[in-house]
Length: 189
Image (tube, rainbow, N blue to C red; front, top):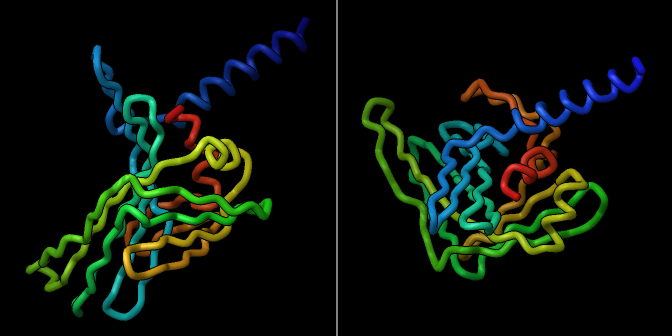
């Protein structure tokens, strides 16, 4: 009897722990629309000289369709070239189990926007894009960590190695980029 009670308590704690992971920035449901947006998570940080680059992921469920939101933020005292995401842009992921998956762009074309921070005298470029999952890669991403990522921008390709633990020097946050999908895809199903 004690074992059964312990098992029930453990299952309750596990279910509650899984629900606590799903904290939404936006969660709205009306008669005609449904939207769930998870907070952005830092996936990559590069600091080199006067230039900082950050890459954030966020998961979205828009009317039953799960999507990946990416945001690239670049900051530099020097000129920063424009990056664009076009209709043929992709995110290619190599999983720890050896499989290679692609996410396809949901954008027709969007380019990074230039801003200027006069206080720190920095140029800032922000690019936001959205990518669709396919049924096959969606299930695979829930089971295996991601080791490498390639983003095919319009006119350029960038490769990223995803760490198991990333502690940001600048933002002072900690994340687990390689297991991001394993942790959070359940939140947008």
